Image (tube, rainbow, N blue to C red; front, side, top):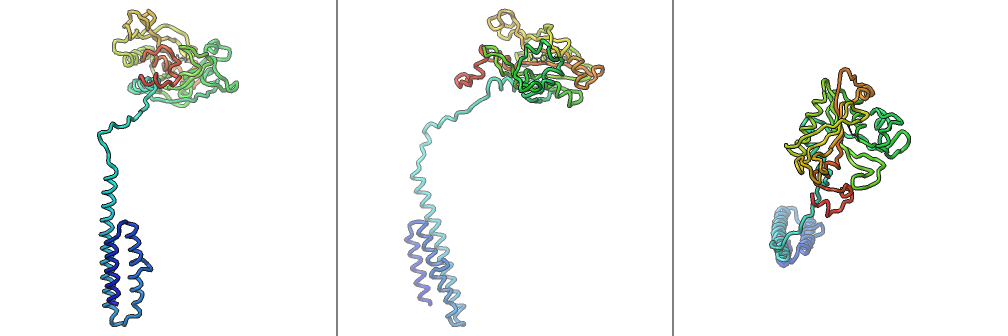
Length: 339
Ligand code: DAH
């Protein structure tokens, strides 16, 4: 038995010594230490050894097994190290080669303008909310004091799903939705896509974006509206910017105004940009009509407020001096890359 063990030991050790790969090393492990391996079968033969010799033989077998196992680990580690070194030698990396350029996308001019606007109004304590693009006639017109047959409907002809549901022609219906669900004080802006059945040209598109603003509280006056929009214009176009309120008419505000800012290009002298007038129109606004408040269950005796509507594309075109709105929608990468 002793000779047999010696033979197994020296044979296994020399085979391990010669093993050239992890695979062949594994084969050797199976051949000696596996379930049907040579050493294992010696163990199984213990029952034929005289009882008094068993401890001695058992100890010998264990010693051989431990030796083989540790030699196995050692060889394995050496083979792995060798394989790694060979791989490293093969995979030479030339760190002086120029790296591949990562092509990063970036924000669309509309998105840049919108984040700027949101930053300004959130800074004044406004909350940003959204409303649906598919809207009820009731919210888009009726509750904004634009009943069936009102001439304001002609300017905002849109796409109808049926006679009650349409694609919103303005973000103003979000005012109604907010007033119906929230108690004053209300201070929100509502950016979003709007639709009109307009033919495409340099200043029109059947789909564009607006940002609605609404403030409702006790004692809100036209002075609050003026101060707010003055601040907004200065933040957006620079501290020198002046604003001008021109009387106008919107069915859901009374009084109403359109707001012009002094031309940020020429400072008001008159240039190609402001078509010689020194002023550029940027939004519509007014004090929320008492009838609109009533239709939204807000008591006009207790509360008042103002609203405004800004065309997002108009701001983006102005800020980036783009003279054709169509460029914003064509997704020509050569155009978009400039901003
Ligand atoms: N909804 C108007 C439009 O699309 C813009 C507007 C004007 C919104 C005055 C307002 C406002 O909230 O007070 O022409």
